Image (spheres, rainbow, N blue to C red):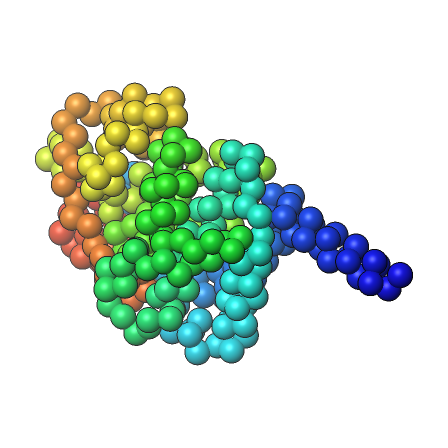
Length: 273
């Protein structure tokens, strides 16, 4: 009888774990604790409005035993969880997974100057018993969901990448959250800026140009017109030429880059708030 009861509880636990990520955001509690402790949203203002660009204290995560334990707990949960299948929850889950695994990779290799030194092809990220590369998650799971806003939600641990969101993505709020991260990014001169009456844009629009013809969008210009500040809308001369900054998105590097931009382009009126 005891064995039957024990078996019942094991089956119950597995069933609960299988649906946990979709129904209860406490699944990402450990990851959120890491974000709360190690992410600073640096706020800036420019001619196009106020925006935030987050930095991550990887050294703190590496040297803090409690945060290391949080990483271990989240990794263990991911090993056995059944990923959601409903589209919005699936999107939120895999964006969170990608961003979390990226932080783990940087911390495990810290100190390091750039995520490019690590790469995105290491097949060691486990979800539901399957090993994934970061490239697998981005190109084979997230991008096929045909929502180009994801390019402003997944984070490559670099200064030039759209800001890491300091809160987990939630399937129940994913549309609102994605709209906000895109609008925030397109106020940031790292991703979009008007120079000599020409709109210079992030290389993301070049690398993934076809993606911006999906999800109800008609290409890069249409996407920009929906989310950019008024001054930057309806511009025909779009140049995808902003050089990507692959330096690690530490606070020192983020502040340095913004200071450089403010000095180089005084017309942007860029300053830290």
